[in-house]
Picture 1 (cartoon, rainbow, N blue to C red):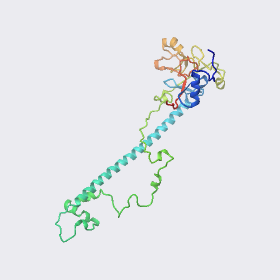
Picture 2: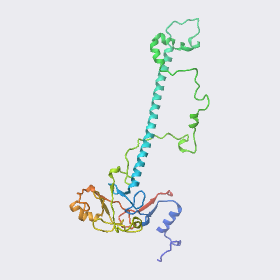
Picture 3: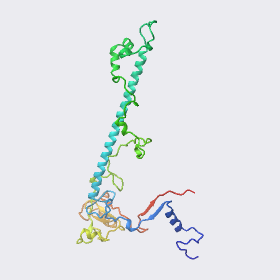
Length: 328
C-alpha cells in the first residue's frame, strides 16, 4: 500500500493524524501536547521569575528561588493572610451582633406576650352599667394597671425596662422616605454579588501558615539555604553566563551541570554536586568535601530540575487542556 499524504481524503481509514487535526480544528475534545526544550526551565533558574538566579536559595524540597523573589512572596502572603483574617473577624463580629439582636428581639416578644396576657386579667368586679373594658380607649399607663394590682409596681418596673422607649407612634418599614442605607442595598443585575439571588458568602478562617508556591508545604525564612554554584569559567561575568548553555560544574568532580544531570545541594556549604558524586563519594564518609562538616540525610537536598525535551529523560513534559466533548 502506498503512503498517503496528510491532506489525502481518498483513504477508507480515518487515520490518527486526521483525527488529531479535526479535533484541534473543531474546538472540542482534550488537547495533549509534548513540551519542547524551549518551554522548560533551566535547573539554575528561579521558580518564580524563571530567570537565572543571582543570589539563589533552595527550600528543603529542592525548589530553587531568587532570594529577593521568595522573600517578597513570603511578605506578600503574610499581608494577604492578615487581610483575610481581618475580613473574617469583621464578619464574625457582625454575625455575633446579629445573634444578639435576635436574642434581644425574642426576649422582648416574650415580655410583650406576658404583658398582654396579664393585662387581660381583671381583679376587681365589673360594673354591669359600664361598657366593656375592650371598648374603652386605653391611654398612657392604664394598659398596665391590672398588672400593677396583681404583681406590684417593683416587678412591673423591671419588666418595663426591657421594652424599648416609645415616643408616639413609630412608622412601619414601608412608611417614610427612602433612607441612604436602603439605596446602597438596591440589587444590581450586572454584578454577581449584588443580584437579588446572591447570598452572602461565609468566610472560612484563613490559615496563618505561609506555604511554598511550588510544593504547597509550609515554608519559613529559616528553611531557606543559600546555594553556591561553581562556575565553569570564573573570568566570565553574569551576563556572559546567561548566553552559555553550560554555565556551572560540580564542586567536586568538575562535571558540567544541566537539566539532564541530577544535582544535589549540600546544606552546610551550599555547594552543588551531582547525585553520582553523592552516591559514590560523599555517602561513604558523610562529610562535606567543601568545608569538612559532618552531613546527615537532611543535609543532602536533591535539586528539582526541569526536563530536557526528550521522551526518555524521566520527566513528564506533557501539557493537557480539557475542552467540551461532543456527545454522540
